[in-house]
Length: 210
Image (cartoon, rainbow, N blue to C red; front, side, top):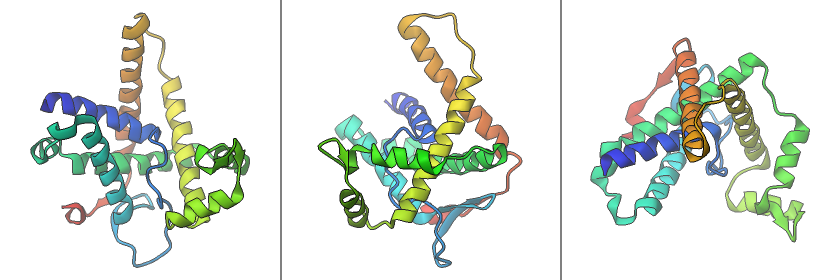
C-alpha cells in the first residue's frame, strides 16, 4: 500500500509543478505585510505559512478522497506528506525564478482571457464581473492578490510546456507510449528544476511546518 501511495505522490508532484490542480491555492501571491510568516524564501520569492497550509490541507484532502479509510495517519507519515508539499511548493517558486531569468511572462490579455473563461465566474456561459468579485470576496482575497497568483501559475505552466517540448518522441505506442511520455515529462521537469535549485539561495524554516 505504501509503495502504491508513493507512486501517487510522484503523480501529485506532476500536478503541483504544472499547476493542473485548478487554483486550489486561494490567496497565494505576493504579500506586502511585513508580519507575514515565511516558511521558505527562494531568490526573493516567499512561501508563506498560509500558502503552505492551504496546499497541505488540499493535498491531504485529495488523498483522503482517493483512498478513503485506507489513508491513515501512519500512511501519511510514511509518505512524508508535509515534506513533499513543501518541496513541491519550493519547486514552484524556483520555476518562477527560472521564468524570470528566461524572460517568460504572461500578458494582461492572456490573464484576462483566463479569468473571463473560468467556469466559476460564468453564468449561462457568460463572464460576470459581479460574480467574479463576489467569489473572491467570499474567499477573502483581493482581486490583485488573485490576479498576481494566477499570473504566476500561468508563467509556471508556460515554463513547464517549454521543458516538455524538449522531450523527443518515444518508440512505444498506445497506452504504453502515453504512460511513458507522461512519466518522462514529470522526470524532465523535476530534473530541470532540481538542477536549477542547486545555484539558488534557498532559506527554509522547517519548524513552522512541524
